[in-house]
Length: 335
Ligand code: TYM
Image 1 (cartoon, rainbow, N blue to C red):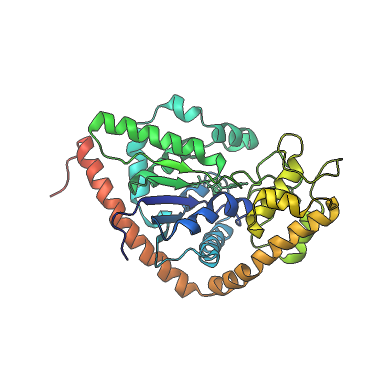
Image 2 (image 1 turned 120 degrees about the horizontal axis):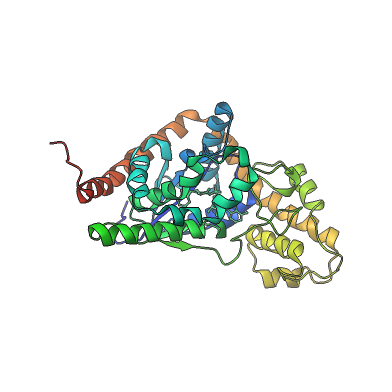
């Protein structure tokens, strides 16, 4: 496949749980749209997942399910490099070198670290703190120019850029400086019960989050119980009407219409009917995806083949950057 002259893209999702409507809206929708125009490297970031405690058997299944879901959504392994992070050791190797070029103070400022430390104060491990540096290694290894992510990952991509800039200044130009690509619509899908907070994979309140693998009845039940407001008007206004605005964003993403067209479509419609129709749009989007995902998840040999080919391709690219970095920092290279 012709990749020359195409801009390189990198992105990943961590398989801590099943993918959500947010994972698709904030990241995967753009990944799929960018496949033809860019040289895309997409990864299942399993090493990032173990900052939280997971049962190994569940974790292993999640990793394969996330890979199957990527494929079912339309990520094409013929067009892009698709692999599992722990299959390419260069990620951990570069992360160590970047650790030595990242200031404690800048890592400590990361909003997600502060939030996650509060959420689980008994497990504030060094990996959680170092997580954005591993993410920088992921991106910089592939000399990615663009990183399609949701709003919550923007700060991490900016840190990767700062680390790259510092390294380039210290050792001479080595890394391409990456930029985040944030979708105009869907950069932050919020919870259905708490429409000011991000919809997240690891929810205690299951009604707050819709998973891409949820069956139609579950999807409909969750949307029907979504929090709205005491008004009656379906209008996009994040500050005054967070619940309705979030539902309009979900509808726009999954029905493929603009927010203003959605507002027109639902003008005069009651909230109960609106929530039902948003749920139906999601169910219709998910129906073929889930059928394909089920087939793929059952075909372990195919998933293994995709992972193997992808890891080999990724490792070749990663090795080029890592060798350069080893030389620049002054490691004696074996003959
Ligand atoms: P993760 O697994 O938390 O999320 C994966 C992607 O989905 C986006 N996202 C959302 N977007 C909109 N609304 C939401 N509710 C929502 N929830 C998740 C995230 O912004 C992200 O783009 N650290 C990353 C994974 C990673 C990575 C990387 C990303 C590892 N290495 C290198 C980019 C580049 C993460 O935890 O994403």
